[in-house]
Length: 291
Image (cartoon, rainbow, N blue to C red; front, side, top):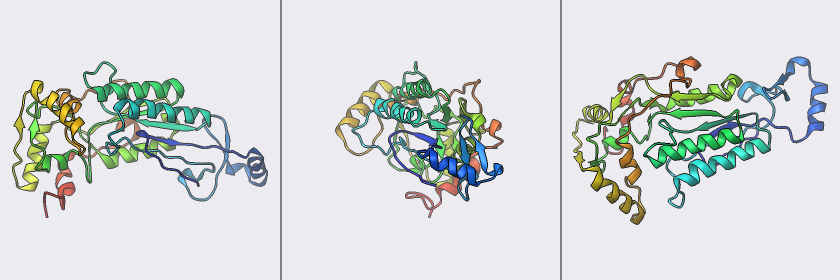
């Protein structure tokens, strides 16, 4: 089963296509009725050995926009234009399923450019391909994450809201399992999923969990938003290495909100893991932490 990988936007998709219709017809003639499946879009496909659900055709999976992109890209480039290009390709090549991984708090009216651009990306994907499945994960924790490991690091010194931002951190493995199930279930087409953990925390509360596990106390200095935000914005433009951005400072003042109309882990039959049960597991052997 052919696969391709790319990184222009944070999107996962399943494509089932048949460039050679004559070959498909021949395959239909040679196989029994039990080997033929009809997709949600009404296209016949052949069951073959191996692969997800053992379906013939092409599989394309696209992931990215995790923050490892070069500094030549703006949030608009990645979250909106990247999503638009992929959605156009999905529509052009008659892709069967398309899952767009967005973000919690995606909102066109948000004071955060990150959240605004995420909402515009959702909108453009749905406008081009109405059956897009939209996924909004909460802040993720797991191996080499940017939550536990950032709080455990010595460089995470400055804050602007006394670390009072509140959210439901979610296990990266649970999100991966949810995405896999969505790809297998055509009933998730056109749906929006909010994927979040079972417990609400402030960043300060998570920092306390981390400090207990690493047996160290990481110091955090609170600087007023009116000072830290423009300073972070300037330094982010001048320095080439990753530092806090002005928008990250803005997001410290925005608590996570859940769309009550969206589906959740419960609709997929998944019980998400609780952060405090896995904190030690993911900090063991970390670069600055537990040996």
